[in-house]
Image (tube, rainbow, N blue to C red; front, side):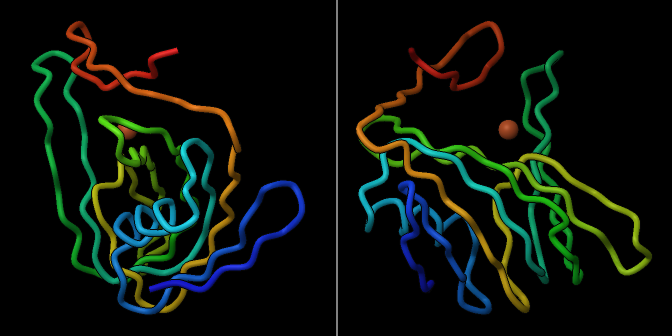
Length: 142
Ligand code: FE
């Protein structure tokens, strides 16, 4: 699913295998390395992705799938925990064939080419989540 090396400073360089789903692979990586809190950045190429938009007025999620080849011009996310499981919050910007970009909250994306990530492990830090009624979001629970 992925290959990784640890580099000084509690960081990992990560290369995802072709055709894997990015959020699934990152979640598996966090489990394997027992990362409880951290941050993620990355670039790569994907062949299909589903983004999510939360309408604050209705608190309804609007999901949309894009079935096309795109470059990940930026992937940024964080790692925390909810109910004892890794909780990944990832956003993405991706460029299309015509060089325009689309983006949003990343639900899923399938690698088509390469996906190269840097994961910062915050070590002993624990970051939890709690559901916030006002926003409809799982916010950090400090
Ligand atoms: Fe989000």
